[in-house]
Length: 316
Image (cartoon, rainbow, N blue to C red):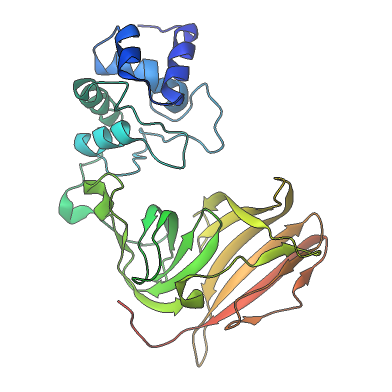
């Protein structure tokens, strides 16, 4: 069966706008019932008709490829249903609980799950993410490090094969801590994002007691926000990329950041920044760290290294 693109546009607008009222749902009945038909109406424009992430809508980052097993919060029909109903905060994925009935959500989740039939459903004892021979990135809610600090609804944890992992807040990108050992447990799969990630490693670096201030400003002293752009796991160590944004929304620099442990008589963590500056910027690293050069970064591409000392304590 072929579907004409013109059918998708008004339905896409319905899915991306604010949740409709009860009366809206009565006035705009859903004419199809099968999971495939519902998927074509509400999902294919972003995720592609074949579930490969190649939809008609251009997003700031590619939509999930279900063919490759790209499921944010678990690959069971139950987990996909919860994700469909609740959406994913901070992404273009809207909630559908007020648009589709639970039966329709279950049907479309079953269809989505069928795109990757060779991947086994994850059971509760398979929710630990294990880093083997290449870096892994987990996105989700970051737990508060202690009772005096707030959790971060949007966070990233990068795990490298050397068994070090790096915890970031990403509303304004900042390294929060470094851990050593096991990676994470996706306990949020059972709660559809209502639970934070469980970070399993032993904490060996805590940046400014888990509440670091922003490091970047213009030469005149105006604060710059670090806006997440992408992550990359294709190299030996995971990379996080972000832009430095003025209050007016102008990009003044782009940064690729990699954290690497050193070798020698004492292990240190080097936070390596490759900075492409369009105008001079200032870096104010945490007072407890050492830096490789002066805090003023001129126009052009430069490397800046912030060194963190590892301690022997265990805060878990």
